[in-house]
Image 1 (cartoon, helix red, strand yellow):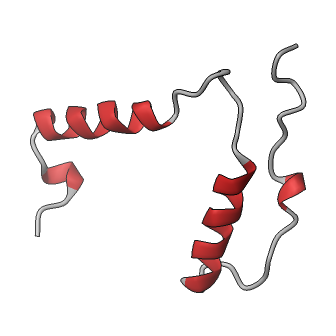
Image 2 (spheres, rainbow, N blue to C red; image 1 turned 135 degrees about the horizontal axis):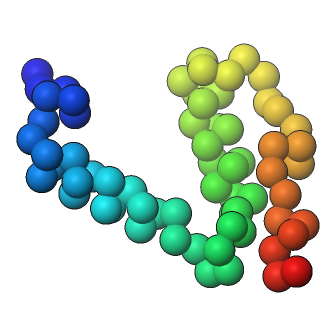
Length: 66
């Protein structure tokens, strides 16, 4: 099985370009609380987290629009 480090440069650049698109938000820097909740749920189901975390301490949108 080929890993990303073994993949050709074109594939790596395409992965990077698509990944960057996921982070382009309006306004820039804003985070979606539902995305954090969903990721926590996934991590709990995968047993990568053992307990729920207080997500209000993980990020803030306090400075958006200032």
